[in-house]
Amino acid sequence: MLHDLRLREAAREIYEAVYPGEEWTPVGFDEAERHGTVHYRQAVQAARRARPILTDAAEQLALI
Image 1 (cartoon, one colour):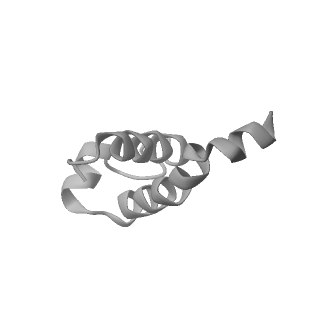
Image 2 (cartoon, rainbow, N blue to C red):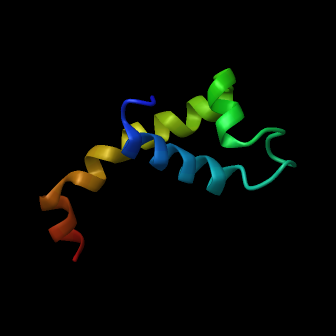
């Protein structure tokens, strides 16, 4: 996912929010990314699913 930096950063934010410390996952985001852990894959999936919602201008206007 190195080619899509915004998606990667979104996945990092999700990963760190959902798995805040070592009690949730034994590795940080970068290592989880290297190894493709289930926690990393779940964060990426969440970022991919959220992207259309966050980029839809009509949806944003409806929320305001």
